[in-house]
Image 1 (cartoon, rainbow, N blue to C red):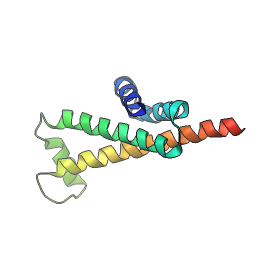
Image 2 (image 1 turned 135 degrees about the horizontal axis):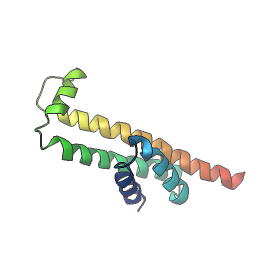
Image 3 (image 1 turned 180 degrees about the horizontal axis):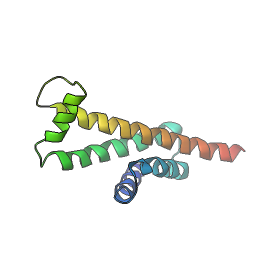
Length: 116
């Protein structure tokens, strides 16, 4: 449930707002619904990791991965025709970590407010 909520809200709001809107969304949803720190991090990470890889695939497949392969060459990835896969994984990892730590912070914020 949390994965879909974070992914759908992030997908909609990223059309109108900057990429980092994923962090406040993960923070708020995890503060509202997560039942543990691990659950908050995991669901936030998975939601954005999958979302950003899916969006990356939607953008890279129609142009035969030209831009992704060039970015891979700029990052000194090994010469191959699958550089675009590495770029998608790096993109998903960066977004997932940003969202995961924001979700974890949201859960701990709620726990801190309960005790304080």
